[in-house]
Length: 119
Image 1 (cartoon, rainbow, N blue to C red):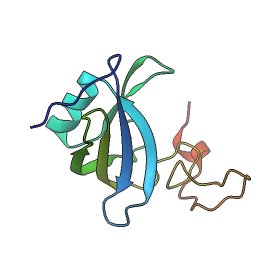
Image 2 (image 1 turned 60 degrees about the horizontal axis):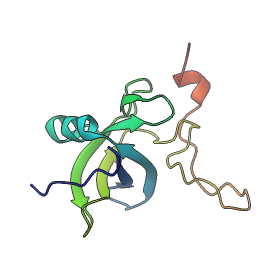
Image 3 (image 1 turned 180 degrees about the vertical axis):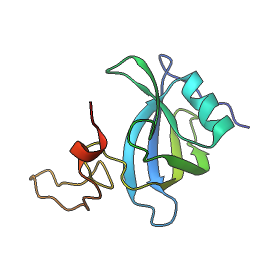
Image 4 (image 1 turned 60 degrees about the vertical axis):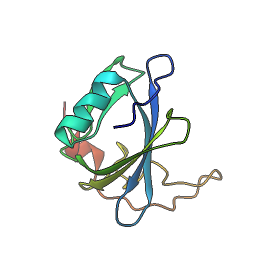
């Protein structure tokens, strides 16, 4: 296995649907998230805003099942191809990249956040 190079303890990750190649999200992994992703086959990330490990789908049930992991030429960025359960974005869209810079919605809404993220 090629060892990634973590910058300041983090590794940028681009996530794509393994069939359509749609970009679903961008996140970061720390060493623990990387190791858990490799060992479980479920994507784990590090939340910079919360300062903690995050298993994608733990709250929503919208897991990312890892099909393939690719590393870039400098070993400092990952591309993960996943089978996405329902949607990747916490706003209810399949992809976090659901709108243009002008604000036009171009993505598919797959769930209502209020139905998923109940306090």
